[in-house]
Image (tube, rainbow, N blue to C red):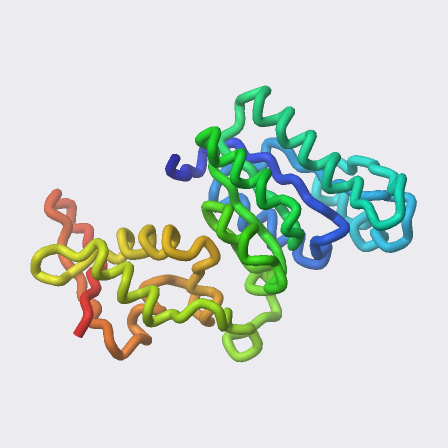
Length: 237
């Protein structure tokens, strides 16, 4: 399923494993993919550890879901979020889910949602286990959403060899003359690595990132429709 700005999305937040400090930016990021029709945050709101989240709930119209920690060492919050997600999935009316957590416990949930044909966007810290990242259609690292972050301070994902990914994507979608539409390359990159995002490398757009790679050539081509629109093309030098 391809994402559209008209998609209805459920934003489910594991408050125990998510950062309250970037919630404004996170919801702005969600709006790029659709409308947050459901916004819920799960946790034991009687504990002082969630105070920072409490200050954001009313401001961002996020519904707090209370889940007491019945047993030490067991995460009841995860179970409550998963149960609600499955209820929402079977109720219908949604096009996708945004799972906000750095916890690998949601790997199977992400996989199950995708098996039903819905999109899954993950949001979490760099420490998020690879299986959860891979289970999402797209995974966004929360540090790139921080307004104070710069290209100098952002951590680069060491596990993602950028050149190899780009070469694989370009070769997979290139025309017979070697040129590839940059948008199509971006889609291929997303399939290769759900966590791929130009902002991970200090660039706002894929075109900017492509131009910085000395092994790529970037050009413009007029769209055949005659509308005067142009498209960016890339090829390996």
